[in-house]
Length: 86
Image (cartoon, rainbow, N blue to C red; front, side):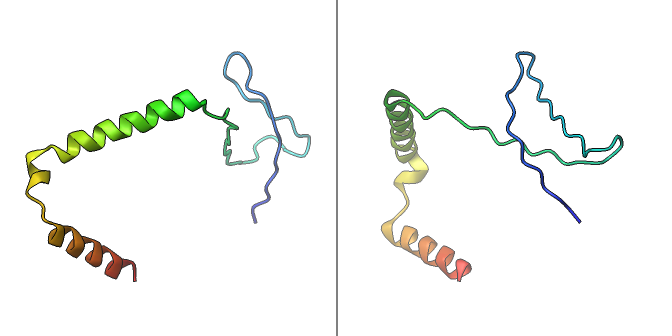
């Protein structure tokens, strides 16, 4: 049986995370999952990322391979994908 323990900690200046819990006995095996609370992105950072994606899309669509794809081929690929997802 697996029992979960949740404990909020602060990462130390040396990058270490320490969990002190008296119920843990030496030699006990434990799996550690780290969930980090991220700072919300600034509007500038979001806008920069959106612009990077737009530039990538524009570059990809300009590739010669992309120029030869027809609307019918795109529709067929979408239909095939949806059929697989069932």
